[in-house]
Length: 219
Image (cartoon, rainbow, N blue to C red; front, side, top):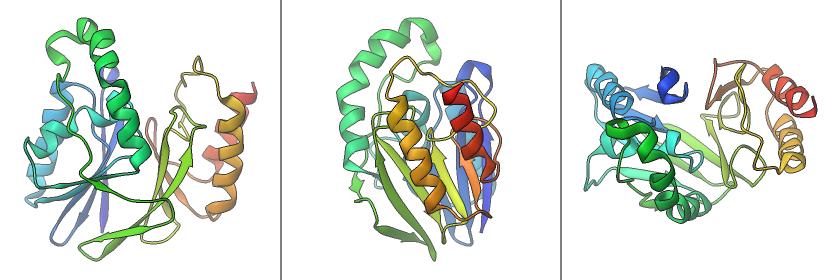
């Protein structure tokens, strides 16, 4: 198993998408925001020469879900896996996001989202090509009102979405900082000290990213 990171540039908000490559395919965790980045991510997948087995979503923000349409095509039989709360938030916010951001991004804005077609509950697992992905439902209390943590083959590889940022600015105007701090403590207890964290924004890091995120919020 290899985990590849695709990181968008400034115009794409430096968002990370992760490609979990196994012998027989690729599982994509989160998408990208813009047309150009989603095409570049699709090209990165094609260069691996393996089919997309599934797309897993950590949360419903456009920079993590918009590019799914380019990754899988539409319509699609590819599994797009998420918590129901993530799907509900996507559906509740898509039109408002189009109205807000399409004028800003112009031709780079992806005009139609592709929704999850397979739902998982917190604490359950799903397996693709021999690799098990376990999801934890963190609810509100991150940079989103619905947050999923995905653990890959145990507890040492953790895709944390926007529960933790890595050396990048956070958007705090939505509030819920106390819930966010509580979720960081929950995350700290769940992950072993040797865990590797794969954040939605910023470089991959160690367990120390949790402390850094806490300190940022408190400051």
